[in-house]
Image (cartoon, rainbow, N blue to C red; front, side, top):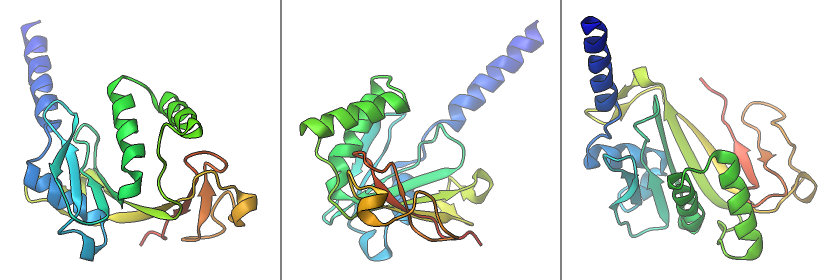
Length: 194
C-alpha cells in the first residue's frame, strides 16, 4: 500500500510540474510564432498563469493578438488573430472559466452575437493557428520544429451559397467554409502537410 501511495504521489507531482506554464518570455516567444513575421515584435500576447487562467503578458501596438499555449494540453498550439476578434475570444475565455463546455460556449456566443451584445470579428479578419507535437517542442528554449500552420478567415453568418465555398476541402490546401450560417462561420485553409 505504501508503494502505491508513493507512486501516486510521484505521479501527482509530475502532473503538477508538467502543467506549469513556461515562463512569460517563453510563452511570448512561442505565441508569436503563429503571427506573420513582420507583426511579431509589436503584437499583443495573452498567456496563462499558474492557475491556468488567461492573462495579458504583453500589450502590443499593432493589430495582431496572440495566445500562448495551454500547458495542460499535450503538444504546442498557439494562435494569432486580428484585434477585431478579441471580444469574441475573451468571451470564450470567460465562459470556459465559468465551466461551460464547447457546445454551451458556442450557443452562448451565438445568442449574444445575434442580440448585438457580443461584437464579432470583422469580415475577412485572419487567425493563424500553429501546432507541433510534444516531441518537437523544447519548452525551456521556446524552440519548435516540424510545426504546422493553418489559417482561418472569419466571415460571420456567411454560407456556402453566399460565398461559393464548399463545405469540405476539394483538395489539399484548398479553402472551405466551416460553421456556415453561424456567428462563427469562417474559411478554413489547411495547407498540405510535408
